[in-house]
Image 1: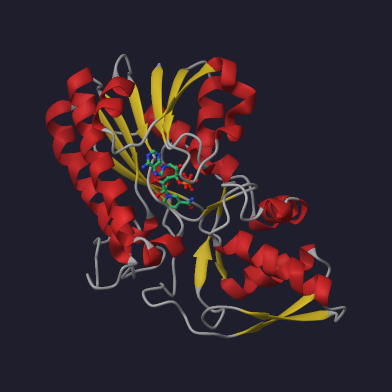
Image 2: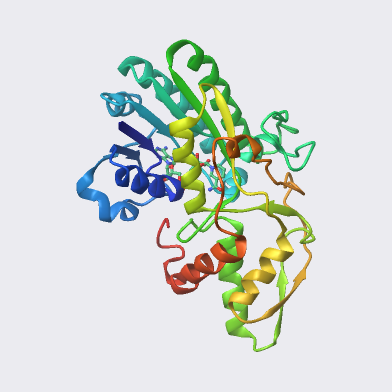
Length: 326
Ligand SMILES: NC(=O)c1ccc[n+]([C@@H]2O[C@H](COP(=O)([O-])OP(=O)(O)OC[C@H]3O[C@@H](n4cnc5c(N)ncnc54)[C@H](O)[C@@H]3O)[C@@H](O)[C@H]2O)c1
């Protein structure tokens, strides 16, 4: 297939592009490197077409959609700290980007659209583990954090309703805490890894006091990037039209567990020191992944397998912090 990956120089996009190329697809990437970097794709440069453009540039998106069979729309402003600090930009990219993608696909006759949504669309899910039928919610429009979830909800509703009329296949995936080497800096694992590294350098204590946001009893389930990409490819092949799917694992861990595991990498014990939870942060999150499992999905990495590989990358590349998008 001829595939367009928006957000293709980002963490997930970069891994997806590699896999699509490996499986013999022709890939065009559209990204403005706001958060991604084309260095992620250096080893496949000769095999792909790279379009450096803003997803808000209508003409560039229209051109990028020409001759494409399947659009993977991933371009979005990710990273929790930006939801609070740049909510208008999050929506500008999210909403204008989605409008341009839909229009570009219709104009070019693209029949397949695969959209990245998020677990954030549930905010505080009523049931954990949460399946895809839980209601989507914006608990407080005045909280800037929900700019991201609002952008994703708008994108989903557009994909579904335009999808019925103009597309043969629209698939929506909701990632739940994807992690791996070079995943960016504005996420819990990289931030913990860098802080833990610094504290371990500054102290020789066997047990490190580690300040965190919240009590540490908040939970998340993390999925390693390799497993995640397996899930994406499975959806491209077997996902149903207008289907919505979680991709994640059901290994629910506390944030304290995460800190302790990262401490283990550095050979130290950890005592978490509770702090204030960011307004709008969710206490518990874990996806029910039964729906994608029925298609054959089975994540292979346990957290204890994927975490050391990830922390090692941040340990060895801490000098890149603040200088690079990866
Ligand atoms: N990583 C996760 O755990 C996670 C969880 C939920 C949802 N998602 C969604 O999955 C997708 C990929 O996430 P990621 O972790 O790879 O994030 P990422 O930030 O690494 O990738 C997003 C990409 O979009 C690009 N982008 C941003 N604004 C753009 C613009 N105006 N024009 C063109 N490109 C632009 C960035 O440069 C970046 O390369 C995003 O839609 C994200 O919201 C990710």
